[in-house]
Length: 608
Ligand code: M6R
Image (cartoon, rainbow, N blue to C red; front, side, top):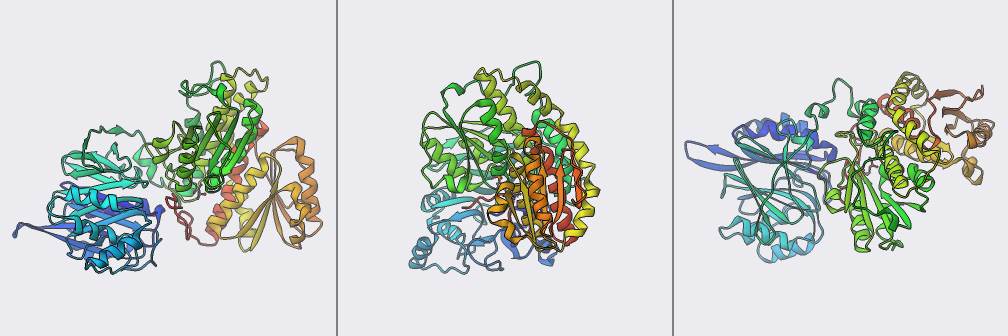
């Protein structure tokens, strides 16, 4: 779960590498390092030079030694520690014992202990605690003049996941890269090529990208890129043009990416709806190759926020598609022998498209003959390549670790998918038209919710010193509570829990005492009174209550109410989640925390 960047061209490599690393810090920031082939033109010789240390990319940028890296070809890394503490020794790039090969790596080498033993038995010394250090040494051990063969032999030794970049004084005109189960893209420019763990890291330089598949190798020279499979047979690839706006990668005047991404939601949802949905025509998702009649159940699988989006749409699929729909956490699904066959539709949700558990769950579903359909934000990511079918949320790049706009766009797209399936199956639900109409109005209603930010900020000021908070709601509101609680935990480090309101009496009410804070979400008129009673029971035990609602609730015992526009009850999560995103954001700001890069977390969890 690290970020890697590479550059080969006519410009000085370091500024490009540093920019790329800064954009990839969401993948980890325990240490950072760069290796460059410096060209000492008088001697006509290239020398491999490395600067690395623990700490953030900004330290690397300000390090005096970095200024001496003047070459035009280099590789760089920002680390999220898995094997070995954050330290200089464990930082990437790692080199082999002969100091000829430098490697950066994202992923986990599962058999590294065995490989370390093998290397030590062959006289090699290892200086770090990392799994990565075996890679440059294996390349060195296999090298006898043919670097491609040495890299392919090394790949055959490795078990686990990797995206690697290799440079060496032996071949100063190229970067060799390879991948398996970790992301890596190549950006193609004029007399220059870029490499990165994701598109946004290099999107300001080019919008033409090559995508490397698993167990493939690429030789990235200044003016060409060649591709090979693991057995060194040549492969042809063409570039894809990515239409994302490089500007969207910047903060655009917002203090943090998370705040910017919260404010982008009306537009992101509008883009996700696009021309897929209209009141007068059938829904269009380009899924005509799927015969939805053959399914007798649906599984929706994801992790974290993506799984919460699944929870929010379960009732939509059950109502409009009339198919039993089960939601599962990918890390549970993959190990629990789910009942799946060719009559099962498995839907995988992922912003990054790189989440290791979701990929494993997807592979399991495929092996059991299910049809796999993924809802992904990042174009060309691993999940899109493994799935039978993919439909994209058009949220644009999401940089903050805490997911916001991806969530609302996932629910939007899944709702459109449910409509599509319902129409395909020929159900003539009289509610479908009003559901569609509500969906189309969401971008405007989201704008109204954004206007509430100052109100929520005021309440956050009252609460930012709390140690515990509880969220309660029923049905779709409970799904939102789960996500609201996750948001608060991950960026403000306040302990919180979400309960289905009806469960309060079955245990958690014992925790309620004077000044306990409860956040209630009420958006469904059918259960509104029930949750309101639960809030009253809490108030009579001393709790303070914040209510997010679209119902007309006039209750002077409630400390603070955030009113949101009404919509179809099944779509309310898209609106009711926004105040909770603001709430977590402002609390984290008041606590002076790094909102975009919370401790111990990474944007994409590419390891189990
Ligand atoms: O990229 P994915 O959507 O697959 O990521 C899944 C989770 O890791 C992610 O939603 C995580 O829970 C977020 N940090 C939540 O804000």
